[in-house]
Length: 107
Image (cartoon, rainbow, N blue to C red; front, side):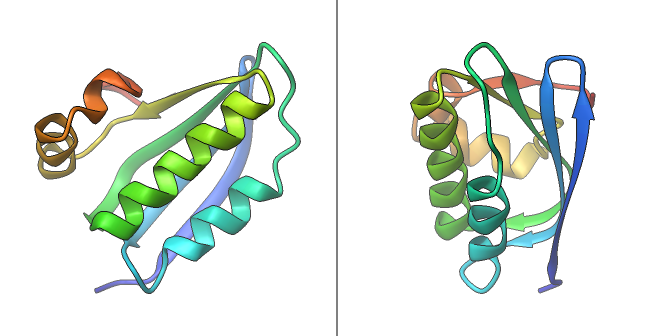
């Protein structure tokens, strides 16, 4: 598995985290850490761009759910962008496609 890189950039609606590599047991803590550093404001939208994601396991899904909780606690929204087909299939199987706002493209 490859390492995980999380890069932050800003957009008009709020922060965007670009996630590249493997979001797995060994690397999910990187995403959790980067999300905890975000000072979200009510009305913003945290976007997580997964277009560079190579692999995602249950630890990665858990990190995405933690990001959702962080956003909701701040009164912000969250959107997942460009979710790879294999990850989207798993998310749909467990109903997370109804929990997250998912956009096919990137920001």
